[in-house]
Length: 158
Image (cartoon, rainbow, N blue to C red; front, side):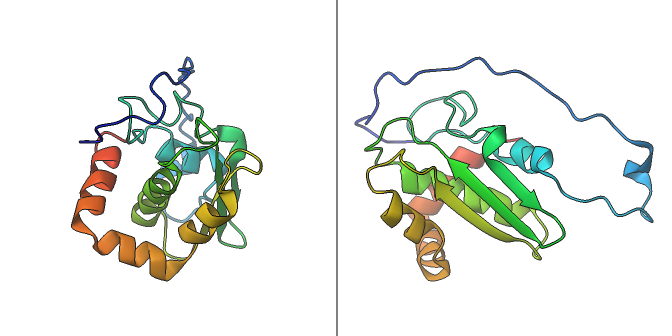
């Protein structure tokens, strides 16, 4: 990822508990409405690679299943993530990776909010403002270098 100087040289790495959602009889019936839930959204983001380390957001506890909120009826998704350190300069990039993954994966009807968990980053207000401003996100994605980094973070995400 060509990030030469790491902000957090020795992050805590957590064990990952592998879980799979069981297949339901109705999963293959097009006549049955299959609501999107927090488990399904978490599966989309947990394997995103950290921009600084060869680890996933789940392994670093940046993404946590308990901080994914989905209201299928009102078409709303809220993701709260926790940077590994309070002054993490990668927080906006991590949030952008989460947003792009969900934009590419969820139906367009969903409004997606991405936020740094309260009290976990010294600039959380500014980071949250950037991550939820459509014009800023669009401008960021027009930057080819930044888009390449985002795509690398998403490359092995399942």
